[in-house]
Length: 264
Image 1: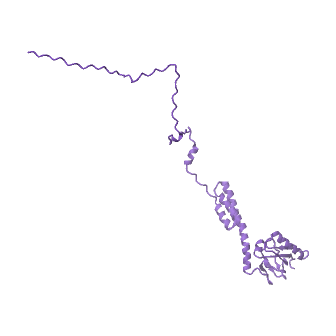
Image 2 (image 1 turned 180 degrees about the vertical axis):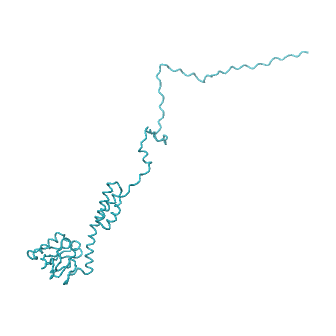
């Protein structure tokens, strides 16, 4: 018995191999024209300065050599020079004993400047303070002395004296005799009996008018004019006038003193 052999199945159609480089879709690109000019590329967009990145300092270039002055700030501070030994005593004494403080201040300033020590400023301050005290204190003390004299009753005229008596010049009256002729600024005198040896006699008391201080020159002129008239002929005459401080304290009298021969 024979069995028919079936025909072989139809073979699948073979596919064409895929090329390694497939051609892109669309028409092929045009080849460049060798005779055309090149087109410049577009400039990059400009970014505003406000939108740029910040945070990096400007580049700095350091020199090749070290500057020794740059390290001076790291070195420890030099010790202070010693202070001159007379500067502090001069400043203290300027308040207590002004003339001594002024002298020591000058010496300390010169010595400190010569040796390079500290204390020139303090010594200069001692000189300034000493001069100020020398000027201000007498101005304050003079009115106080006049006020004290008034308070203790030392402003009235002297009566008869029986011996050498210490008195204020403003207490003198016409006919008072003095042991010595006053010279310069005089506030206190020694009064003696006129029948004993004396150097001067008060020959006139010159009252001065006005409430405000007229000035030293005007006061001296008024008293001198009166002294020329009242003084004995040929006698040495001295005019005593109140000071500005005495005027403020109420002294309104000038004095004419005539010199006398010792033993007269």
